[in-house]
Image 1 (cartoon, rainbow over the protein chains, first blue to last red):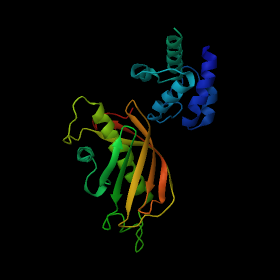
Image 2 (cartoon, helix red, strand yellow):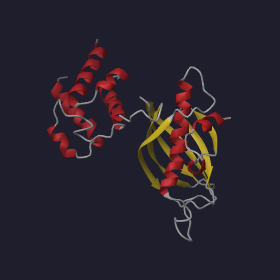
Image 3 (cartoon, rainbow over the protein chains, first blue to last red):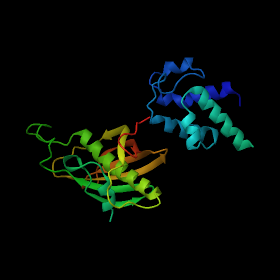
Image 4 (cartoon, each protein chain N blue to C red):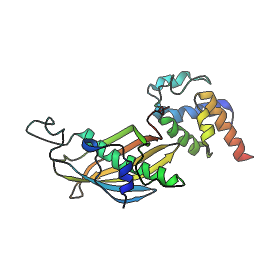
Amino acid sequence: MDRQSILEELKRVLTPYTANKEDLNSINDDTDLIKDLKINSANLIDIIIDAEAKYGIEIDADSAEKMSNVGSCINVIIEKMQQKEG
Amino acid sequence: MYQYILDHLPNKSSFRFVDNISSLDENGITGDYTLRENAFFYEDHFIGNPVTPGVILTEIMAQIGLQSLGIYLILNGLKEIKKDGDRTLFPLLTATDVSFYKIVLPGQKVTVISKKEFFRFGKLKCYVEMLDENKDLVAKGMLAGIIKGAAKTKLS
């Protein structure tokens, strides 16, 4: 799965936790989940759990800490999907 | 038998809303609290017509359903269970989505039943119900919180 299609799916994962849904229309790798999308920091854990279910992956605490912006989320998802396949 | 859980609750005196834990395991908890007729909030809520505020019902659900269960899960995960309350556990309520169905009057006893949805990275999310003495539904909803090791730790 390429970055663009992961980004599109990630938008759907982020939607219930994003205050202003229209903010999701303009997200890119540098979009910060807390600062730009105004996501409650405690909900980052819900997002990680939702992403795990969506992609059938397991995200450990070290990887979870890295997931602060959209680009780093996509990186972790790709890494974990590759680990799963490999 | 769950006194050590109560000893770890940081809420004291007028803001302690757990009397008794009747069942507890890693997937959920049941406990109860009897509303004190002389509680501070009845005097003004409302004058001459005391009813328990929704925020207090929510707090009872959080103290039994999240805090007590969360403390149990954390202590269970430790190699050595500290039975004496050292007050280093600091719970923060991060989200609630609660609906109310019945009024609770001074002196009534309520039972809280909480089922764990997940406990990961320090966040506990539960589906919680509150029943009155007739087993009628008083409130239900989702509550989530984070338990930090110490008060000085930042939420993020």
